[in-house]
Amino acid sequence: MPTSIYEFKARTIGGEEISLDQYKGKTLLIVNTASECGYTPQYAGLEALYKKYRDRGFAVLGFPCNQFGRQEPGTEAQIQAFCQKNYGVTFPMFAKVDVNGDRAHPLFDYLKKSLPGILNTEPIKWNFTKFLVDRSGKPIERFAPATPPESIQKAVESVL
Image (cartoon, rainbow, N blue to C red):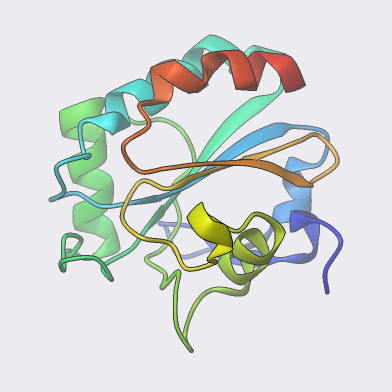
């Protein structure tokens, strides 16, 4: 079992494979996103959190996912353009991933095992599930899709 998120790699939305150890020492909010979801307007709140706290060592990492209602059908280029045009997203975005099942990205398997959801079940239930990760790379809190980014500001501040 990995001991932190820094042991994982992911492909950026631009196609570059990176190690998540480049985020060492930062507080992170890792979110599975979708462009055609009822929660899609949360992009604005996520961007606001990122802008407010990035100078204090905070980052939002967005991972598009098409597993829930096929609400992320576009290519990475389309997703990136949508996020920038409609929500001014500047936080790091990654290539589309699965978050559940046999093809789930190993990062999300780790996050789910570290922080099971409601009734101690691991699977992610929908788009915009959020995982707060402390500066040492340890997941410390999981937030439901319906939880707006604005309401987790205190949790973010407590680990900055």
